[in-house]
Length: 103
Image (tube, rainbow, N blue to C red; front, side, top):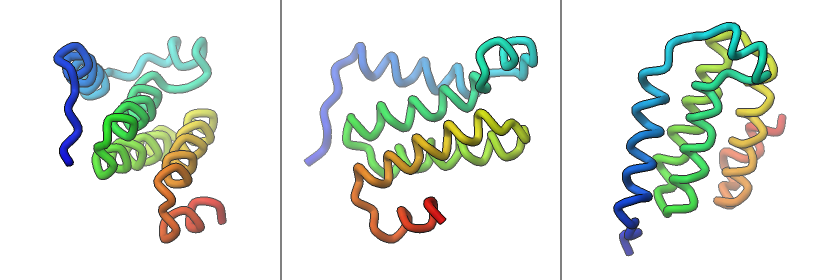
């Protein structure tokens, strides 16, 4: 079964993708927000895709958020992205990848 999304949801996902891709680093915003906005966008996009039934894309966005946080060397963003990524794996009941994230 292919998940069906309403046009407003599809538009919101597309906008979030564009924002995540076009984001340029703004260190002031990162200091104020506590986590990197690009990493946050990728994390929440992963949650939206998971809830919409696109599990592979959800995992890809979640892994992208983790990789971006590592690249930025920003610990709060890394901690948050790992927590969300672990939550997605637990919800997916991914017994192969889940133990790798908790170790």
